[in-house]
Amino acid sequence: MKAALLHRSKPSAKWFVKLITTFTFLLLYIPLVCLVAYSFVGTDPVSGASFFTWNWYSEALKDEGLRSGLWISLWVGLWSTLGATILGTTAAIALERASFPGKKLFDAFTLVPLIVPEIVMGLSLLIWFVALGLTLGAFSIILAHITFSFSYVIITVRTRLKDFDPSLEEAARDLGATPAQTFWKVTFPLIWPGILSGALMAFTLSFDDFLITFFTAGVGSDTLPIKLYSMIKYGISPKVNALSTLILLATILMVLFIFNPKKKTGLAAHS
Amino acid sequence: MEPHLKNSLSKSKTYWFAIPTIGWMIWFLVIPLIIVFIYSFLTKGIYGGIVYRSTLENYSRAFDWLYFGIFFQSVKLALFTAIFCLLIGYPMAYALATASQKLRPVLLTLLVVPFWTNFVVRTYALKVMFADQGPINSLALSLGLIDAPITLSNSYAMVWLGMVTNYLPYMVLPLYVTLEKFDFSLLEAGRDLGASGWNNFWKVLIPLTKHGIVTGSILVFTPALGEFLIPDLLGGAKTMLMGNLITEQFLKMRDWPFGSALSMVLMAVVLASLVVIIRLWMKESEASSSETMRDAA
Image 1 (cartoon, chains in turn orange, purple):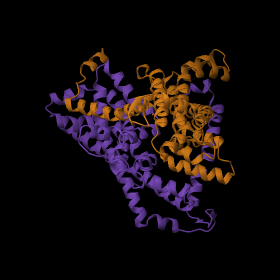
Image 2 (image 1 turned 60 degrees about the horizontal axis):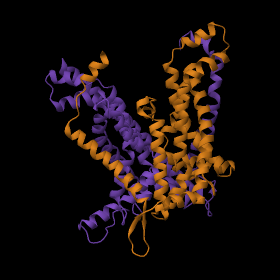
Image 3 (image 1 turned 120 degrees about the horizontal axis):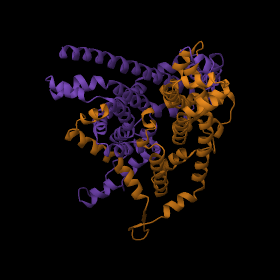
Image 4 (image 1 turned 30 degrees about the horizontal axis):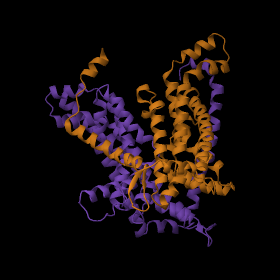
């Protein structure tokens, strides 16, 4: 009833609001559409005429450098997601369910990775890794990625922990479950969606990251965004267009199936 | 904490859960930042290493006119980006929040796709679009507007355009979340009480959605200050901003102490702006909400 009333009283946006929105969506999408269109264009070296081709795709897929970039990105994404999910979930449980000295300070510090400029985090980790004598490579990138992404997991898991009724845990304990049983049979299944969406976010952040990786990657450990960047610095190439189109396609599929706004996972809201 | 929670996950044990994360934060976040702070007072060695001799020279150099200009440009760009994103983003979020049940998920998906698309890819798409042989030039050529391709890329305008389009989703999403929860019947009430559309907007809608405005502004302004990729790819050699200056000191000049001093200044600017943004909005909203109350009375 209340929802229906609220719905009815929602005004329709004025024409200029709709105009700005339409214009901005065009501004966001026209470059992407051009990118996709250009990835299919080949130019005849003799006549200079343009024609349709799949050639750039096969070249992009054959490129050894890009393939290794993709593997490193996936490898780094996998391990950093695992690390960030464990750290984020345990921290969220402690923050919601325990009291300990310095908890407020800890709580405030979990926001630091979200506030420190990416570039400062990247260079501070570079200095620290060099001081520790750690060889820069996939391992150092994983450590850096865990550091910037665990806060996002804390946020999504905490939201779940806040939402569920604590008397469920109490009931389990009253019925004779041990703390471990209560956790694995009651708490964990209930916070699982939060853990999952936090993990997905950590993976996406890791897979997309450019700047922090730029600082913490060593020779031969370039992730896909770094490879892409060096190719772009070299100049515009149809091969990069093809690869970018593939990345865009993967993003669209991911949004439609995982971050689907209709499913109300709340992921859009958290970031 | 409610007392009955004691039985569930017993307090005495759960706090152990915080230890790995606290340890990680100290080791990979706090210590590295402290080291940057210390490095900013050290001297660069001849071969790019570090000499443990304390100096304030890095800071006096950072406030040199040359670098001060770069800082000023970066703050200006970040401010412009945040304001422009807000000006475009607010109507967008409003349109999304008031869209019909059918249209809304479509628009939301259209907004979330660029949000999750790789930053490098999006920046590159703009580069392609405005390239000498790109679609804009081809179109203008075929329409006979120009005789030869004009160079649109590698300019300040491109950097501005890139910043606004790339950061826009970070502004619109928090605004949308706030506007979606907004009770639009309040606007009707305002109208019934005789408020003009303009008054309704400034005294009801804006103060009640300030949370989204603050969040969006912070999400855009803070990363925009240290942005490296967009000026690097779209600005060519012409545009030097804080992010590029710092990166150059670290990866090219190998002057880590000076780079550290610059990053400390960047951190200070970020923190100061956070305080200003939050203060400004809290005050303004208090003032206008009390005004609204008075008006209503």
